[in-house]
Image 1: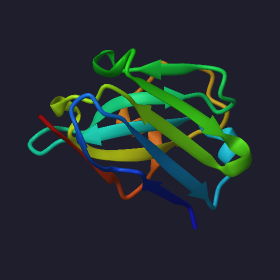
Image 2: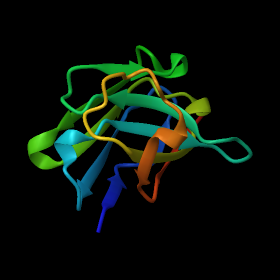
Image 3: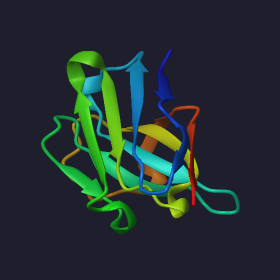
Length: 128
């Protein structure tokens, strides 16, 4: 079965860093554009970052540009989110997601409905 398993979350002080990992299985990993979303209490799930199926292109929410970096290692079926200079507003449950389609052309559609597979989430808490 399809699985996405996130790890790497935790408690960190503002200005600190964390690296999230997501390992996929049960599907052709290198055909799927992958993304990270996050959801804070009382908020809707929001897009954070995306990396194309071949790793050639990335796209970020304005709120994390310059601080977060998404990458992937298709040989390991893993996508990463390096988070630097964390702020209290980054506190959320972070989800890894895999695209519904294979080999998508555009990286600019970040709607949640474009992603068919989701991990269980990993909690990131940033203290002030």
